[in-house]
Every structure is written in C-alpha cells, then in structure tokens.
Image (cartoon, rainbow, N blue to C red; front, side, top):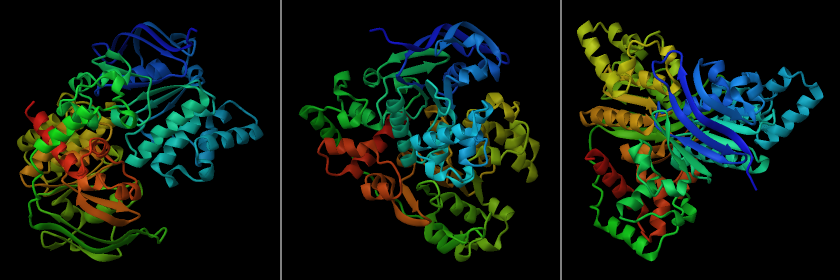
Length: 572
C-alpha cells in the first residue's frame, strides 16, 4: 500500500534576498503522513530555513528566490499564503514567550479560532478539548508569565492544534527547558503524534534528548544540503554526527571508545532496547578498568561566601530562597542546576545586587557585598542573563560588545582588541558591523556573552550560556570559558544542560524549591536517581550503560569517560 505524502521537496533551493549565495541547495526530501522526522545539523546549515519553507514564513516573512517545487499537505507552497499553510502546519517556536498573544492561557489557545470568527460556544468547547489534550486545562485562567517553561510550550502547542493541523513543526523545542521538562516535552510530542496520527517534524541539535522517544528518520544537513536521510540506528553506527558538528548520544561515544562495533540490529538509537553481547559488555568493562582513576579535587581559598540567606519578592511574601549557605572558591568552575523556578536565577540576582535579601551575609574576597552598589559589584562579578533581549541596548554588534569598556573609559585601541578577540571566540567576528536585529536568538546570546568577556571580571556568572547553540559553537564558548578559568577566573554556570555540567564543571550545586539539596561532584549528582528525581534533572545515559555492563561504580565510570572524551577532542 502506497503511503500518503505529507511534505515533498523536489530539486528545491532557496536564496534570501539579502544573501549573496543560496542557503538551500538541491533539496530532495519526502516526508510521509504520520512520520516523525528529526532535522539536525550545525548552526547555519539551513535546517531552520527548511522549516520556514514548510510553514510558509518563507517567503511571507523572509523573502527570497526559490527553485524547484515544494508541496505541503497536498498544497503547492509557492501558491499558498501564510494563512493557508497555517491551516495545515502548526509551528511551535524555540522562544515560546515570543509566540504568546493572549492575556490568559485560554485566550492564547483561542486566538486562531477567534480570527476565524467561530461561534463563542464552539470556541469554548474546542479550547477545553485541546487544553485537556496538552494538559493545561488547569491553568486556562493563568497569565502566560505565571506558568512554567514546560507549560508555556504546551500552551504554544495547543494554540496551533486548535486548527486540527496535519503537520506539527517544532523549532528547537528543548532550547529553554530544564532537563526533566525537556524529557516531558519529548514524551508529549510522541504522545500527541500517536493520538492524532499527525506528521511531526522536529528541528533540534540535542539529538540524544530527542531520541528519548523513537523517531522514524533523521535528516542531517550541512551547508544547505542533505548529507544523510535514514534511520537513527544506521546513522549512529557511522561517524557522520561528530564529523558534521553534532554531539552523539554519550553512551554511543562511550561504546565506540571501548571498541564496540555498533550494528543497526543492536538498536543503538534507544538505550532501553540496546542489545549488547557478553563480549561487548566485557569490552566496556575492560575499557573502564584501564582508565586512570579520576583525580581528587584541588583545594583553593574561598571567593564568594554566602551564609543563611533568605529572599522573598515583596509581591508574594513567599520565600524564593531559603537558608542558602554556600562557598564558591577562587578559580572554581561550577554549575548551579535545578528545575525552572527552583531559585537559581534569583540567587544570581541577589549576588549581583539586583535584589536585596531579607537576611543572611554575602562576602566576596573578604568584602561585604551588601555595602557595594550594583556598579561596584559589576567590577568584580560579570553576569550574563538567560534572555539576550533583556541585556542588549545598542543597535550594532560592535557597539554592544564595546559598551562596558567605553563606559569605563578604555582607550579605543584596547577596546577594538578586546572586542575583536571576544567576537572571534563567540563565532561572531564576520558580523561585527551587523545590526543586532539581524541576528538569531542564539547569535544574540553570544553577543551578550562577548559583552561580559571583554570586561575580564574576577567571577563570571552565566545563565544558560549555551542555550540554542550547536555543538561547535557550544564547544568554542565553553573551551574559552575553560581557558579563562585556567587563568584564574571563577566561572559559575546556571544551566539545564547536563552534558555541559558533566563535561566542564567538576562541582554541581543543586537547587530545589529555593533550597540547596545537593553540593557534590557533577558525576555524583547525575548518577544519583534520588537527586535527579527530586530536582527534576535528567540522569546521564552513562549511568544506564554502566549498569548494562555490570560496572558497580557508575559515578567513576562517568568521570573517566568525561576525562577521556576531553582528551580525545582536545588532541583530535
């Protein structure tokens, strides 16, 4: 029986009006009804452009010249306007805050129905039905800012599902979610697809997280072309992903390091179903045994000391931070982790002086921080916010990155040198004369990081520094931060990225409900199912691989893998 075609690209190409070269070349891709497809590739490979072609944003919002043909849901995309395609394709954006229209969750879901002039009674029935489907029926009267990141994504999904669309397109759906919520989002997408039979297209570079639930095919892109279109089982037996700048699942990399020859029949795409022979398990055990034990942590002197700190916003009176006691040492690189709303970002605001705690003490290298203004603290502690749009104040990239140096009276020669260095590290040097408005969300993020790096503070706090970054840019930024750390800068990362925590920060501080519930090695945190569950984190796949291979020290297995992986990637 012949399958129904949902999306078809035939010899398709596209070139933006503002670009000298095409972004997409000779795309031939057929997606069948009911398939779940993952489109992956490094930043700039064309995957988002491909998505914009599917949902009609090209050419409606991004004009340019296309060649070849594209049909979506049986419609010729070239002959349809954005409104027509939106009846077929529902899009959930990376930045869910940018997708909200209504003042309440119910209004937001109802927006498309109101535009279609549906009867009020029918609108209420449809909104309630869709809200139950995406599990937000209990927050219909809430404002969007009152709900969690995961709930926001569910509301965005509900807003596009009211049209009973045949195709759901997710543009980097995991970028701003904590690990547990990202896991739930992948489960939700899988559940919705099974219940509705719709076609699902996911654009995402966090491949291991997406593979928490099966996908039918992975489409891998590079420089505007498709370089792989097939099953994940086959893809993971090759070296294509690391060659193209995409991180493999950690357990797959570990198996390859151990000399295990992967075959599609082993089901390497889904860890719970991964089939290993006794010989292959022994290979992993032997590899682990041959690695040197992880070194003991070096002791250094305290830099930031916080004791018995409480904080509550005046609007609610409810304590957001409760009896926080923490010491961060000179030259440390550590992660602060926990679910959305756990108090991580509020903690950094207290440290930087943006808000004042009700009680507790804060000292920085012997100085009482509470005697220092925000400006005075900023000379010692740099802070990069999670949302880049809340930090940027200049129209052009160079001016934005130079802003802090100009305010501090640096000579122009020194400003140009530092800005050039920071932009190079953050992958933005070719765009230094560009307007900030022309950048993607991920590129804006790199601009804000560059604007802090040029100041060379003693401590740098970064809120989600790698959100929305592909593996290459992620590695460039983190390697640079590691180099700063080796030269003595203390680096604190507030992150949802468990890979980042494992790879770059020996220590992790875990927040939950305004309290610190763990302060231990990153490997210990992610190999403790109790901490993972309580803090809404996501356990490392290395934990489950070690259990499969009868290794009784999963924490040590994780540490030795991270050390070996760093060595391999550093030395090529």
